[in-house]
Image 1 (cartoon, helix red, strand yellow):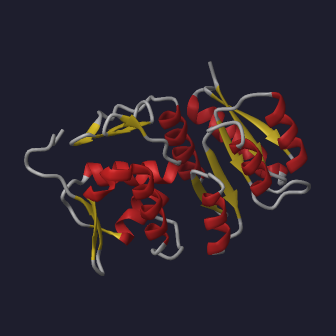
Image 2 (image 1 turned 45 degrees about the vertical axis):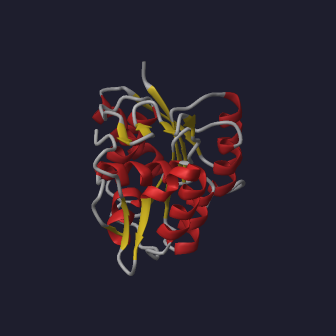
Length: 232
């Protein structure tokens, strides 16, 4: 069965080239459902389910931020912004509304496809990542689940991704720049201090288990585990 992708984009030529590329690269396993304006996208979103949303920010009618906000009220569907807007505040607003990634025009179709494929695979639990643990802290990438001291912890996409990177690099210093690249992507050009606010949210969600995330002064962060803790 093909994965259905809602593409909200007002440029007809771009809608067509993305649809053709995704269909060819996926062997027909990715179906692009186009919407030429924001209102049409909202109507499609209200009427049907999708495996990924590709949203332009600047659209006739409802803009991409409005569509993202509407989707997040009822769904955790992956959301990828495709836009010409490069301002840092626009990127941060998108992430704050629950977007998973950002591609700035002009972009490579190969990069767009790779990001879309990765988001769908993660959302569908098709990744092969094993569970990551540090004592009573457990992250299961395939199931999108986090447990701390035996209790489930609900994390937004960026906090989940941050914790995953930290667990994959236990007892290693990760600079803010390194975390930005791993979580936001190499093309993110915002301030690296965005990491601090998301680390703060992650610590708040983890409660008592947050003490394993250490701030390294003027350097970055690391997740520390003791020798007697599970090192899986």
